[in-house]
Image: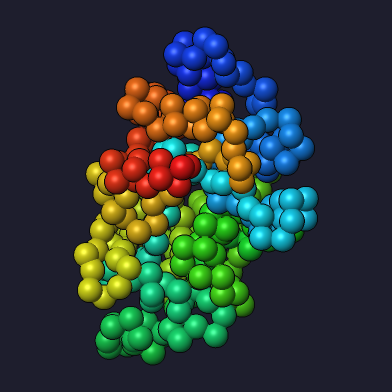
Length: 290
């Protein structure tokens, strides 16, 4: 988010000569930005994911039980930029006749003690009905004890904080080799009983993605760029600015600036290919800040 933070800082300072903003942090990971915010080194921290449970705990330890920093949505994640907080796609083998899935079904697939374990429970018949669904995903916890950002997102968005299924084959990034998200799709391409999550940019021959909806009532969305832009696709991601739980006037002014039309246009021009927030999401973010 360095380029966006610099662009927003320049445009804010041009409009607020009496209180110019300055970037005091260049961070590769949101965890570094959070450390700087918690230590009081910065007042605005760019965040390309949701808070980790451990970060919430550290914040509450410093400021008191129940205290949480404010995550203000400022952009929609990309559709398919690798590493760019991209939308999450659900992959199955191309020969699998299944075409769609609900988040409620996905929860029962991925959660421990979930009620869905066979393809017949998803509506498939014939010889496929009794076959067990082979699940593939990322390593749930890294050596730091924190989850990968995608795992963290799915825990909140899909699992509703239920624990992960024990039968998921876990894949990890390899130094100088393929990423976990690529390995997941490879595994799906090699197994007609497999299902895994990844990003649209990791699609491979022999696989396809499923249309998603919240519930059986629909509507179902395939994950087209227009659906991600409108935030209709259920596994669309979000980009945030993280600020203190009681931001001062200057901090509020900066975040409000980022939520204005001109600053949102900078998002569309950025190499990460995030999307500006649609009007309803902008209004909700402004209300949250207030």
